[in-house]
Length: 167
Image 1: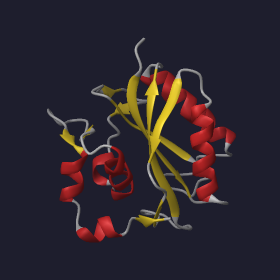
Image 2: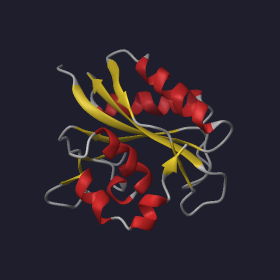
Image 3: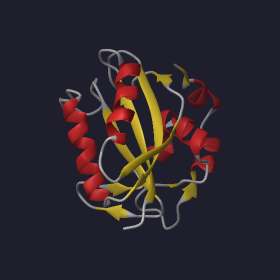
Image 4: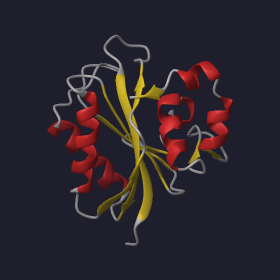
């Protein structure tokens, strides 16, 4: 299998979230058949629809020789290594690894939707993603055509974009 470029969103808001994100990047780079190509800066964001401390967020670009399902499985195993528990939607977490996009793959399965179904709406994903690549195609699962991340970020309010600040 030839390597596919993929983008992974990282987030944490428990413990030392900046260290968790940096450590997660190192841990992901240790997974066989994954090469971390670039990472965005770390960003601070407030939790959405949930209590808790601010999040540290980042996006990484990888070259991957795994299927989307195998990559997702690897990311979820890393979350568990970092002490992730799933107590509820948007609950505080030690680490969250979201598969945002894998080149032009479109998947709509119960366990995996690509591109990520809400990435195009979230400043905490779009700001670090656009730092790496404004051309990554995103959109809702029902969309006939996807649009570049740079188009989606331009649709966000300036207030939303300004809520994402450098760590």
